[in-house]
Image (cartoon, rainbow, N blue to C red; front, side):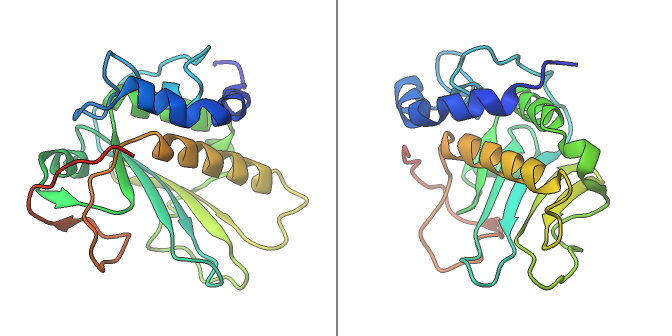
Length: 205
């Protein structure tokens, strides 16, 4: 297993994230131009170990569950997934979903493993069956094929590793999501819903 330094790299790269993305550009296949990597850009492009490309349907999501805050969702999907293909082709759009390459998604899964996500996540927990616990804050969900792993932050977890693992995973998702170009239109729509739309002009973030 790789050294557990994924989030250390992400922290060191935060200040360079925007500049890395602007300099590298973005290709329509979910990878940065010139053979770059969205995960690599989010981690500063230094010392990260690329993962194996995934070949199935994979998504990584953070969603706010606190009613006192805006209903924000950030999702990453791999380029060869059904959603990834729809978004890239312009036959669908989303305000919340970003597409990364299959190899970047493999790297993303490795980074989440390094952050102990799979050690503390609940198998079978997803966005559709998250319990309505009082005071819940948010949830991180990995979906691979028919399987899901979820980690929900709720009150009373202060004496467990979950709050730190959850926060580190959330920040990693934010960093990669922020480094990826979006496929979206500005309409009044549910941010969790990927919907059919005409082909749109992609905009650099």
